[in-house]
Image (cartoon, rainbow over all chains, first blue to last red; front, side, top):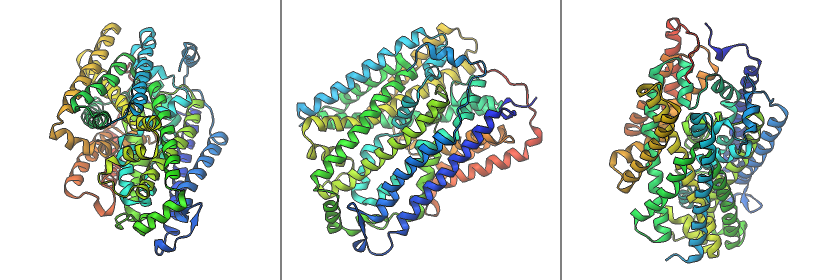
Length: 101
Length: 484
């Protein structure tokens, strides 16, 4: 008998797609972080340019990276992620009624 | 000597989490399924609580004490490195994501080990996983207790054993009576303390330094390399810094105490919310805390011991009551890590050892009694170990983070998404992951200029794939066996 885990359940297709989106986001996150950090920091630190008081490489890579990723992730989750039920028997509704956190 | 202004917020905070933790016991005593409630909060976490407990469990003493200390001496390069932690906020929930949540429900899994056992239909997988969790997480828990007690010791100026006792009592009792729900709920408070503590201290540090521009000028005057991404002594190569993306970013998927949270949420909506909230919170806390460490250098360049940077600067730039609130943040980080580890190790002992091998047909009442007892006894053992930590414990703790990642990352991820992955792959990948981590750490640390964790993770991947393919024909799937 085949394992239940790899059945043709359509929810698994959603899950797989979203996992790949996660991988894609990490790649984007990494490239942004790496690109600005090491692309803008060539030469002597005494000749760095500054944005809002921070060295430009740091501003774009770390502060900018955090802002961009937060926006991107919010967008991805709101637009591309699908809500699927987790329980087959819908026992979740019953559990939720018990009062949760 | 500590002023009363600093002391009061700290004590107030310890009382609050203690009572919140105790209050959750009513859920435990009313629940129909004790195991699900005690070790998983009845899979009832909403998005905000899920985000907070992920973040608080993940953020530990090193984010608030060790990290800023290194940033103080290394400069902005260490802040850059700390940002490799940003994916920890979203990657775990996206990768384990819905598949893990659905499958864990199908299998009635309460722990990560339950899941692995049902996925690979192998007792040996379960046993290996249980042993690595008990050994590694126990030692890292003891190390966190030592950290917590040392912090109380230095803040309150009391003997170490008394500090340890205060710490143990304030954490252990509520975890024992309240279980996972108590951990998650108190984590929410602790996470809020960590978040606001970081913001307050960051703003105060910038003001005390006369603005960011001023601070950067002072740093350049001390050593221009402090504002480069390569570290004050050029010790941070791009490759080395990038390899931290494995250790503290994507590899976090393999940490059992984090992964178990990915099966505790109520529904998809909670998961979606948690992804957004935990990314923003993890990002702000990591960026903020490490930045504070760098800024501190400009304000007081004479701090000799790295671990004292954060407490020293807090007391220097803040009025006492606020300093007390801010110093509660590292306390919160330690407690929220320890409580998760305690319930995790307890679940491995109760569910994966006791109920799997010693007493398979235990009654609900017996399970209850055993669970409370095991959690309490574990706490007491950790207490005595932390009193004077034995050498092997310190040694084990060195591997616990990376070792667990190397052991679990592929059996979990490939187990979820790769059909051909089988028990031979899982068993060998765990063995190779952990033992190669120990060997690399001992004989060739930071191999090829990358953090030690990289090679074991690569080796365990190769092992998993090769072993699974070679044994593919041997595997016959039996009908799904219910674990519960």
